[in-house]
Length: 104
Image 1 (tube, rainbow, N blue to C red):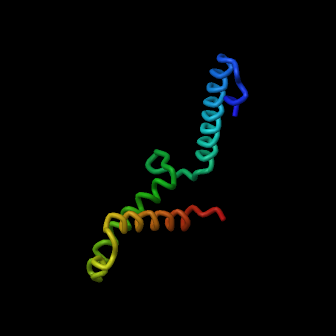
Image 2 (cartoon, rainbow, N blue to C red):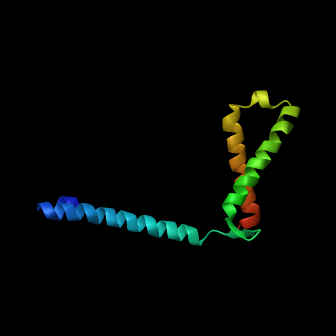
Image 3 (cartoon, rainbow, N blue to C red):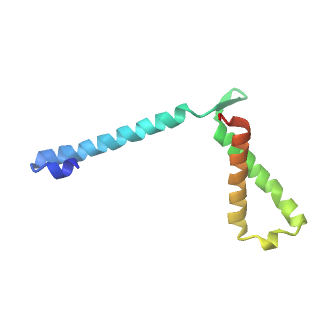
């Protein structure tokens, strides 16, 4: 929007810089807002975000579900294994997050 209003050369350069400054400011504000509301777990003296712990738990649970699906002979009826197990891992990670870190 600032570029349309500027007709002088140095004002155009300032408008481009102003657009970048606004974009960087909004990005930094969004990152700080998101970082402040995430629960953190203290594991062996190190702080880990809760979503990372839930992601690892979802991946492990999806890996443990594969032998079960093989034993039940359901795997041939599912779609592409990479897509199915990745989706299962994300689903289980979200369920884990909602079970342990739900603030509602």
